[in-house]
Image (cartoon, rainbow over all chains, first blue to last red):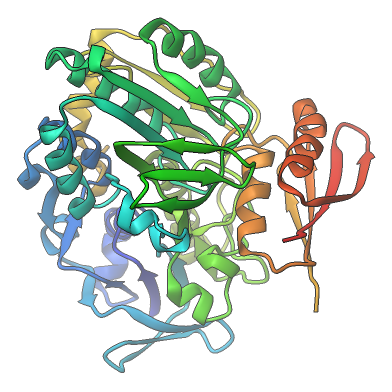
Length: 379
Length: 76
């Protein structure tokens, strides 16, 4: 009997899963034993980590986008028709256009989104680079900046956990090259008691900040922003003034997850090893959508997707579960406009960042293009 | 009605236990409790210190074999 795998979400995780399944189950797709369907929200696929370079004019916007139908294997039935209700009891998903899709296996890959509107004044008073519109506006603000106080303000939870540090280092180099660094006071705020969630990265970043003259305030969770007075206050009781506020807004998962009763805030309770939704054995959760206490990052999505492909193929072909996710995460860390390093870790191996080098920076620039091979399931 | 949510952050290197707690409290209602499990020694000290600063209540803090559990009630 024919099986249907339904993927909700057309970001990196969902796309890798779809393409990987096509590569391993060509025979089943040919003989009609398998159908793969994806429900996406857009005709275009965006390379999200590339947004970091937009404010500094270091990537062309056209490089960030591909048509999703061209990124996806042609054998995937792709609909730009966002899920409206996911019913894991009836094994079906209804969409905004009113269609109903039944499934044998469901992959939830609905991702996360920024919520600047969740903090009073942040949307009006802040700049960010986590979406294209924000990155464009920040580019304009940086081009007009002639000196003053900049605050890089990090809020929990957020995806791409090294991006806030990267933007601080890149901003330093950008302003230095423009002769504006001496006229700038840059302050970085972070929600917990060190500069980064990863202890090893925090220990590395602190002397780097001190060497460059970047100020910092830890235990800073934004309570409100006053766009008129140009100040921001923290839940911990401190206040900072700014001329330019670059915020990493708090994130939430997709509204459809909340609306379907699958997880508060859009995060789905997920087994950290099997990636099954808690309580289901035919629903996998990948990428930012999980509630696993792990980095919400493209590499996490990629490695989870690889495991999920193997498990779906094995379940369909052999009737057995194949392997568990080991918590692997790999992140490049840009340490300026011409140097970089990387961290990797998993559930049992702590991270240990190496010394920054120009070569790793170049490899990151190369990966900005190699990404499209990852999305296609080739890398 | 107040809820208690468990977060098993044992072995979590990133974003780590305190960041998980902060994120969970943002979604919780006043009176809800978060039962956070952590194997990170620093958390046992960091979490009560942060709660005292922000005004949330630490209801319990228990050392188990190889990990701590800290129950925090959202106070505001």
